[in-house]
Image (cartoon, rainbow over all chains, first blue to last red; front, side):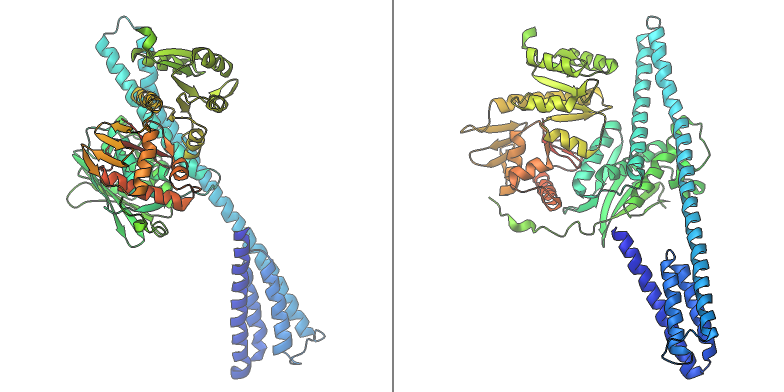
Length: 362
Length: 234
């Protein structure tokens, strides 16, 4: 509803501006250059412009009417009187209305066609995602199904050692599956029929706390270096999704940054934005992959290397989430070696309200 | 000795999940009573009077959350909810209905056992009432002296503001239970929870954690569940 009203205001404003400029040009033509026979052409052009820029038919036709009246009233003989008896006036009115109708019809069609194209692309994206995911699901499911059926079928002939190894494999691969499901859920949370993201205030410290605990639980051996501001920073966000972003980037480093000995997680404030910076000292990212690193699941290439699977979807989920937050995300290699991922979130209206000194010590 | 074990009522309709949870609990010294639907769960609850209930929500013959509200009418037996949904609003709804904690499927054994232990502790704690005169709350090296309204770590006093103390006292009274933002805000500020209040609560919590010497990722005293609430735990 609100959007609809805003659109009308915008359209009306555009129309008035164009009409105003046209009127001004017409006055110049008439009074200074005295070539008033071209005034009608200028108005025809204005009608064309308005029909092209505004949505629907209404404003184009309105401009045509206003144009006809203006030309008739102010710029053609008899001046300052409406007179349609003169055939020239009548014809110019007709031409303007026809032009407005045709242009509007054409632009409306064009807009619809563009919408269909966007929708089609989204469908294609979804299909690609589904294909990539189903393909990726097969590997861990093979481990889980294969190992467990082996244990059940030959329970007595397998040594305890082998059984334990298989069960550990089952555990690892199910954990990977859980990660995949979390990512898919995150996408549906954003993509669910254009539902808008619900942002709530979240303190950076709490977010970091939760992320670090979850990461440490799965990868206790990885050295995490944390550097976040000492002051309390509140950022409006969908915390579950942002947590997912950070975990995905951490995990990406675990899987792909060969030779990495630590991951550092740094957050700092820059004007109205909180910049999250996650870097590692591993092997860095190949140049050829760097450009398309965030649109992983669109690419058709499939890696057979088991350790490298899950490459695409995690980072593309990150960029989807950050874009939905109105932030930006980027990746680059460090001169000293390793890769750095950076994303920003707006802190605006996060830190405005409370006077924290209201309460005194006991 | 068997009679002294905690009785846990496990309500779950999926046979595979029931098998692994009951095996896990029994190995860890709990007595398990099984129920695989709503009707059975009601009967078991009234006839066995369990110390803890692990409740799955999607039961074939009724919504598990109805059972939760039914139990809560006049009973404080801790309830841990098993939920397949992970959104905050669902968690908040269940906690506000009276669940002590929730575990989102899928979960690991360590996670479930930790929740069971901490929910049983909360039950023990509330029954010996730390609010009696001279009452003290002890959690590892953290001590709250309710009479003096002071908090100590390793016998050293931590200077808290009124509000910070009130929050800690509230969490300690419900130690082991996940307290939602709205429950804390209503109890501490007696206000309706809105965005501003949640910010205020988070700022206070951040300061408390700093004063307790907790860095992000230190899993000590306070557990925070993003977008839901806080819990004091051992």
